[in-house]
Image (cartoon, rainbow over all chains, first blue to last red; front, side, top):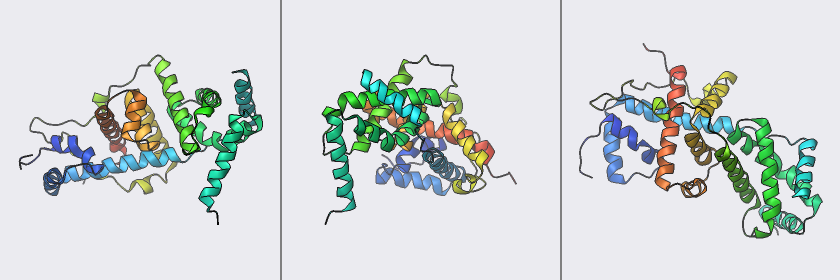
Length: 81
Length: 203
């Protein structure tokens, strides 16, 4: 990749690779250069990460109890299958 | 001395051996131990309690049919997790798609020169803090539920169920690159929906 600056659109398109730690070092350097001089892209990156964290958090809380009626229905279905 | 890990493993092995000979008590125990976690996975995919219960039932029938293929070196909970995810995916695929919003409308816009059309600003507080409010938790759940199905499933599989890109691609019969693109768009769409409510007030 030739050294040139990125637009916000390009930075945001490639952001997932950066977040996942899958961006090649040279490209990451160019990406970080953009971030250093672009507060909206810094805010975008941070809020993107936060949205992912919040999604994980609200989904992980529930363990749904199995009522005896459902357990019995499953056993009956297994027996019939 | 046996480690707790190997104790759990040998308990699993005993249970699997009993399941393989069709011991009903073993199935009852499996439903009791693993059912609650499996039902919550089904509930996330189906967004509906009755459908989640149907998926759980169908998943246990699959377990009964396939338990003889289970290899003792695999982890029982992971094997069961994949079965319930696949059962939910099959059910979603078989359903008539309801009208859904287009993902394009949920993605960030850009000006012709490549700048963000609606420049991002930090959020008012950290996610951890924001999630202390019950209505924010509900709001985030609804935002995930509103994602178009192809994107919502990938977000669930990758970020919530923590399946790998390769596993997700295989289960959905798409390329790994398609999984990556859908995950990025799904996350962007989630961020975009949360943004207006969570943004710091403009000065």
